Image (cartoon, rainbow, N blue to C red; front, side, top):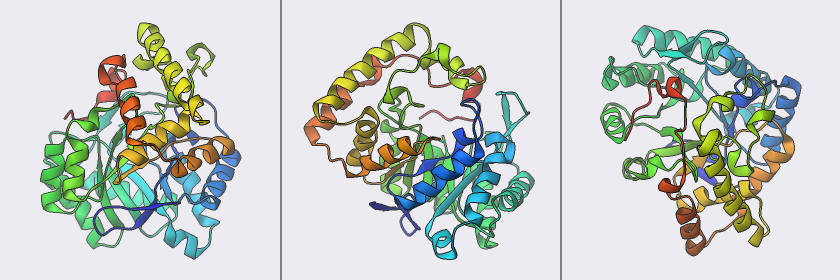
Length: 332
């Protein structure tokens, strides 16, 4: 698979990574044995970028990644990017959260993540969400201290504004910014993608398949009771119906070229931006293989323009999170 660099002088990453959140929470019941098979297969087909966070499953997702890492060879461990995050504090069984960016918490969170992952150094460590009461300069200084101590190789930010990125980058190089970006979530195109390109910061796109909605309309009524998409505005009511029509148009587009919706959605990102790494999540080997195959799909400028117009922001309905999900997210 094509390799893309994390930051100007950072580690190489596969052009498509694997988001691991759904293996432990938010999308109904999961099975660790199945997830470990997906992780192993991902490595076999060239995926080297694995993304988690301490809040996913309240540490269980990091533990799962730790099991995976413990069973691969040193050469493979040295070749992968193990990314995790700190900052979101939640109570078991609740979606609501608070944000903690204090220096003491950052140090504590890093040590806990290192232990759960079973590694001596985290390849990419993100501030998951901003606490606006703590200056970003203070947050980045605390993270830079972890780099100096050898506990972290590179640092990143998630869901921040371009202005915050510039302030942070002035303190220490920011290797990556992670935010939601897909055909139906185009906010980073306002300024963030250009800012990342200017600063040499890689943009990591989470939910590049719209939490699977872009792969094919999701029947909300059939989702598990604890699947958070049941409360996601884009999936429900008039917004959900309007967005299903857009997915039907995407299906017609993909069919013209003998492709799947998911392949088109990922190829749109990869062909449009050279410094973006999408990290679709899945718990199925077949979906993983289909997603990875998108790295070999070439779209023409005309095709990209057609997709841009198909999913023009005014045509997409609904907010991307319920109200509680916007805690700690900065707008551009």
